[in-house]
Image 1 (cartoon, rainbow, N blue to C red):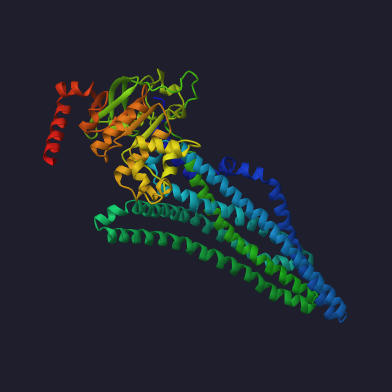
Image 2: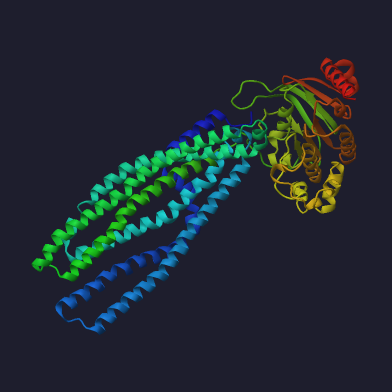
Length: 602
């Protein structure tokens, strides 16, 4: 089979989620953006480091003022000169701080956009098996919470890390210049900070991962409830759903509180250790001033530098928090965008003639990934053109056959042919570009009627849209809407009836003007007279082309050229309506039942 082993893929993803090295994540997801924006980063960090050094010069200026006042040599002119220097430095700091924020935080937003585009494009490239294993809520969490965590880590987290390193090293250098021994005393508590940060950060990683998982569940539940709101109201299930949502919210809050507990320890511990150093300075530094080993200005400058060190000490905990969140989120994003489809694509085949409507199945056998149950079992048929009906009992394989025709799942080599070529030798896009599809539950967007109908074609004219709507027998009803073709129909077509949604979806398929049309029970909500008009329009529009119609309605099937009857995955009959009425017991039974129902209703 031209596919990947889903069991192996799942194992690879589990390994990826648990043990992908940071260097691998960097090369796979981040390095290209850092290279692309290296000039922005260079100037941003130059501005950031300049701000740090300008701030470090202020205590030296204050030291001069204090020492001159203590020695009695200070004058008003001298003090005004010092004040002007401080104001000038402060003004320069304001400008440079704006510059680095614009450049560095702006970079994190570009990085976020790049990752979001990667996620979105990868999702659109994935197959049905991928979506059967992941909820919409989980995918949305990757594009919201996870992206926000990565953006913070590569924005403020990166800035705070560089700022803390530069500021702390420079401040320690100035402190050593004032008094090396006093500096040693002041830095004694720092190893405690490193140990505490390492212990707490390890716990933070696991707890934040749990938060993201709970957010995925909460998002998926909310999405599902909104989509199913009519069903929930019909069964008066509102309070039950509210209670479930509340319980899930409590679990999410509890997970966040456990993360907050770690954060609540990181910051106070950092601050406590920093203030312990200040206490040491007050004791030993005060004695050095009394003994005359350092001046009062030195003591004031040293104390200011130590206070500057408290921020880097606190930043260690904050940066560790952001880094752990970012790495966890990055691993989750990596797990998503490295997932591979089981449907292996092939390059476009120039031998395929455009406009062909030919399909051929030869002993087509198929089971869904991870299942041993055969949904299709040695099915064989050939179609050149015409309207082909597909019918059978529930679970007989009708929809599965449509999915394989659309190349949503992989098939064995030599079992399905399109235009006399094995589908595994054709690109997926090459085949799908020849097929229009209408499902029983059509997907409509919260947009105008014309935008929904014209979705499947580029630069389609309103005249073409109206012609397709006429063939789908929905044109007059659209004109009766408040704004005609400019009427916004609401998300998922909530303002329309089932039959209107199906016919708008059919019109969209007709606008695409592709040689093959697959209608998977997509006329189930349409009445018989409308059905007749649609079939007549399809015969004219699809002359010498192919239409597959899945249905169990005899009236509709009787208007097709031939009918495929499936039973538990096997093709039991392939014949016109009249022949099946004489020879097939299943077809005879549903015909008899529907004729009786029609007579009773009449």
